[in-house]
Amino acid sequence: MSVNLNEYFNLGLDSTNNPIEEAGQINVFRTPVDTSSVNLNRITFKVPKSGLLTADSMLNLQFVLQDNTATDSQYTLNLINGAIGAIKRTRILLDNKVLVDLQRPGLPEIVKLYSRNTQIELAERDYKLMGNQFRTTVDQEGLEILKTSDTRYYTNQLAVNSLDRNIILQPASSKVYGIPIKHLGADFLEAASLPVFLLGEREMIIEIEFFSDSREYIVTPDKTGSSNVAANTVKVVVENCELVTTHIILPNSVEQNELAAMRRQPVQYPLLDTYLIKGTVNTSPGGTGAANQADYRINFQNREVHNLLLCPTDIVPSSNSVLANQKSVSLGKEVLQMKINGQNLFDRPITNQANIYQLTTYSENGRALKLPIGACRVDPLTLTNMNQSTQQFYLDYRGGCHYVKVDFSNGNNGVFGSGTLMRQAAVIEQTYTSATVDFPNQKATRDMNFYPTISKLLSIGANQIAISF
Image (cartoon, rainbow, N blue to C red; front, top):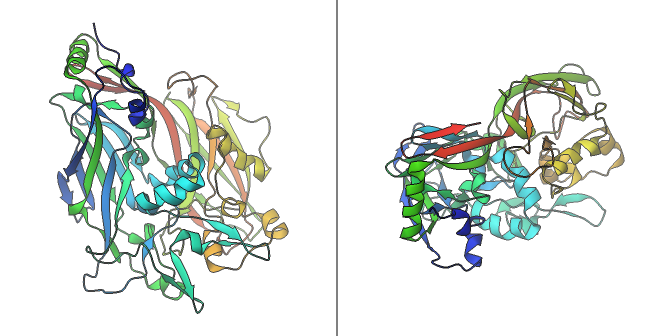
């Protein structure tokens, strides 16, 4: 008779709060890089196959200046997602079969970071781990400004912005950051730890690729010199990266029973997976106030979709003082309609910008983004009726967190059966009416990133591993 693993864990390490008989111990493994390529900015790790892999596992990495003789620096990680912004692509392979393949994981993770976490978690825990720190305040005149005293990034002496913490310099003085792998596409570990002990002789590989252009994730407070920041100003020390995994070690009797049961019937592990679909959006035709329509057709290949995130980003990165290129740019006033399985998702196109913002809240189970409206919206209404600060830091981040996430769940629980099965190509109809050409520039061609979250089933058998949708 096999033992139900659910009796030994609930959600990652939370299971240790519930005493059980023959409870397993918790081990932490520090795994060096298995393969690395400086030219490709790519590293791989082999995950230890002990017990249950938990969501507390993380990737350790360090940023240094390309110039190893420099003694001064004004560079730091972007304020919105920190070290995650350096990750270009994450892949997780089981027995050489792709379980996770997520490009630019920092973009969809921003929505989770700023909706699921409290301000204290963002200010203390995530700041120490990943280097992201983002807070604004209201000055005496009622204008929103970046709260430099709380962000711990900037000091202002004699009206000159300078950096005093999290400085990127040389290996001896640069901070080492930790990115939980649940933020790199493996967020399914928050629902259930992965029984890696069942893999046996088969390998679990984590492959990480970094951006070669450091302007994707590095910022500087010096506005006068920001245009002089080169693409290779900062680099990741790939050979010194480290995978720190946390495992719940089960009693030997439990593991043997589960291995015996797996030989008779494969172990099934349902999970939610997110991946990237690329597109473009062009709002440059016409002047300010001109409407531009963008239509997309996405074939989800009969997969069950739970939600869809839309993120327009700059094609060419630049050393923005606050967010770098880790942002979703507001493109003005929007009109949104979708056709799902041949029928309109909404009774009529959504034109109210507050309702469009609320769609993201619905997709996060009622949790709103902990960001001011200026970060999420820049449309004629906000420009006309809301006082705007002229602080450079505020202008740099204004309209840089415009994430639109549409929920397709049907109210059921679980991985399978709670989403929408896409039997036909989904049609996304958007109209953008630009309101400004500066902070942000809404008249440009941008990458349009679509992040669908789908149901996926991992089956671990005695002789093979199967991944199905």
